[in-house]
Image (cartoon, rainbow, N blue to C red):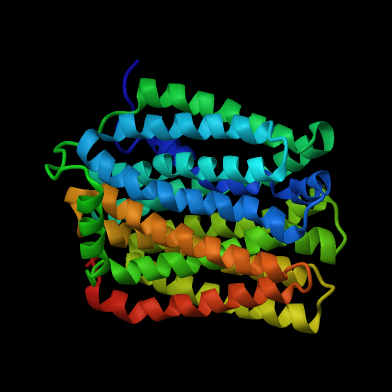
Amino acid sequence: MAHLKPGTLGLTALLGLLTAIGPLSTDMYLPSLPSIQRHFGASAGAVQWTLSAYLIGFAIGQIFYGPLADRRGRKPVMMVGLLLYGVANLASAFAPNLEVLIGARLLQGIGAAGPMVIARAIVRDLYEGREAGQQLARMGTIMGIVPAIAPVLGAALEVTLGWRANFLGVVLLVIGLTFTVILRLPETLRTPLAAPFSLKEIVKGYHALIRDPRFTPFAWLSAMTYAGLFAFISGSSFVIQGHFGLGPTAFAIAFGVMVLGYILGTLVAQKVVVRRGSLKAIEIGVWLQAAGGLVMLVCSIVIPQALAGLAVPMAIYAMGVGFTLPQSAAGALMPFPEKAGSVSSLLGILQMGFAALIGVIVGAFVARTPVALTGMTALMGLLSCLAIPRIRRTNPFS
């Protein structure tokens, strides 16, 4: 069977789905969080660790996948991640207690890190400049469709088969993706990195990137942007089902409004990148994030019982995410074609590690007040604006 070619919808769709298993792992089982809490007799904060453990695992996994893929090739390393991810989902489905579930979620994160990191590196292998930004935005659109569907599917599985069915459904998807990668995905690494694969070399490479002004502003933007989004992802189930008293299906619909905002953002961003460039897309995105976060915070204080005051401003924030996340990844990758895997890894480590911390903070307070969620999202939206001056100075898109 022939390999998929660059620029084709098939390759874009495959890479988009591979990056989408990250949000799928958080969004599909969100409607089941209250059920998991009741099943194990745990607190909301304890159940929140199933989300944060996943992100911690995701951050840990990214330490190694990128540098290894720069040396050993994209496909074999991706296969390792997919295999671990599938096995960890099986373990989650049959977890006898919350502690095992949290541990299995940690392994899920380690496994899921591989496909996401390597998919971004493949884009850098195949595309340059604005074309890379457009490709990542298209993948972002596909990645957005999955979390739009995931909570609805997760709610249906929850109602009909119970919360464990969410993880079994993901196992079926992983099997299909694994066979597609084996048969259709080309190996895109042309020249393997000559540096030896060791922890010392990995740390040395990451240290150089952290000090590089071409990388750091995009890393900051990516971390702040995703942390604000994850504050909503981690706390919305408890707020919408607890504070507003809605069921899993209603939560899935409200969550879908946010995801539709993200999808719209990626679609519009593609046009902005073509006409005005990636820098303009980033500028529009951060202002949407700041505005959406602040409006949501004000609404949670002034009209705390209005669900629209949560869902609509969050959709505006998510629209901004659709502008900024793909372009911040492209901006970080552009100056470093020889180590795209390592750059993609470090970007993900900072992004997911910080989001995990924010998730723990929100989880500790969200059962008491929705302001824990809205205030954190607003703060992250404002902090993302601080990256703009430095990005303008280093602008790798020009």
